[in-house]
Image (cartoon, rainbow, N blue to C red):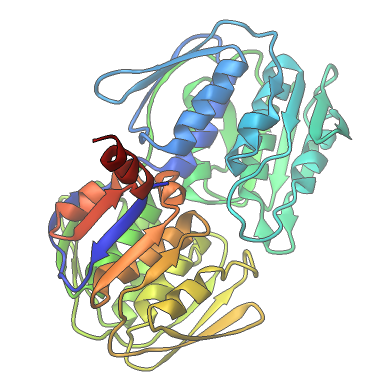
Length: 433
């Protein structure tokens, strides 16, 4: 199993390019099931999760291929296949995003309950309630969600708010089913994340009629068919935020290119409050300048445009070296604190209290072996390891491969001393020599 070995204490310097957004690309790839013709998608990152989605699409009768420049082209070749198998879906939460497009285009779906990172309960009841409002009949049996939509129709006004805010993947599913349902559907408390906006605009480019894009109220007028189209996926705001944390935590000076700062107001505001130097440039790039020990700050995760839960762990790593006490409150996934114990192994002082953590900054972290538990926790451990004195070994980096494209190469390009290795392969090679 691959691991990262990091020799910390090197300030990151240079320029780095942000990849396309995984969380936008996945529902957009799922939505290509709706198209009558081929779709050509630019900016799709080459990630483990993307490859999983492509395999799921192949199981559903979609021919998909990646060109030399990274562009992915999809074409539906067998519209009769409706089963997304457990063997693939169990590895990735976003697999559930094929449910809505299958129901909308083929009027039937059999999708296994999804897996993904262990960050607390993430039920799909709002997905199913929304689809039932469109006239779907839902049967849950043997770990699969079965949906029949022979009489699919506009669902009138329906509500997708949950106990911790709007459901992002639920909004994607209901939206993707409603665009081909005769009549009008009004989604109240729709997710407003940039990735949902990108999906909605992609659907419009295919011929969908959607009003209120970017707002909590989406009005969808069903159309008879959707055509194939060309699209470029938005940049990954979570990767950009992760790189900004790494630059700040190492006292570096990094220019991040290809990002959209308008989608990052909340995390950039927190960085400014911590005293991190930010320079927004006319070309759209962002310069991040570390300034010694940052100031403490309070972070509360909220639905967009609030602070993103997917950056909570990385910012906690940065707060571990702040000069004072900080508070981190998780209001999206209250159990998303598995990274706390691993940061403590590096010398962090963190006390967890319910859905909050109190972080008392220390002058420095020290390297140690740590274990990644989920995608964003693994990114936080890498960020912390880059700043820690000595050697940090991060195990189970397959988690980070799910959401960060060639992260070690990008960091090495900024001067980081980070290597990917596999002890088992090394030992096997040594034994065979």
